[in-house]
Image (cartoon, rainbow, N blue to C red; front, side, top):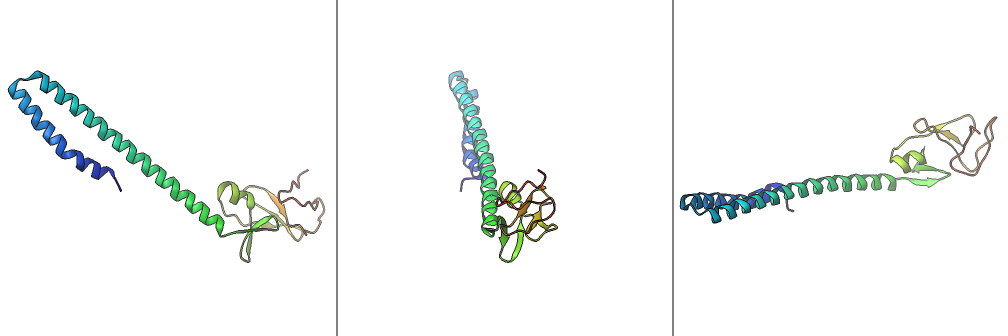
Length: 148
């Protein structure tokens, strides 16, 4: 893999040779060669800066890939059933928090069997066979609006 240190090491001998050539050109008082060598030195510095930029972008993308892989592996550990996520017999976990933020949040049971509340995103959920409770309607949707 190409990294910034390797790139800098590759350019180091060229910079040394360029410096020596500039000294010779100054001693010989050949202004045309001197100006071309100075122009070449500027291009080498631009290339080095571009290599630094590429290295920075590669590092940023590598971090993003690692983050996405971590998120993918996290979600693969869960099964979606009864309108919520479960990890084996553990759970339920909030589907909104896991789907939107990849945040693992255990749901808290509420008054009636099969009804749950997420303290993180304030969402309310019910299993398909949830018991009715005062002020709670049994709805077959995983995202239930108990407020309305």
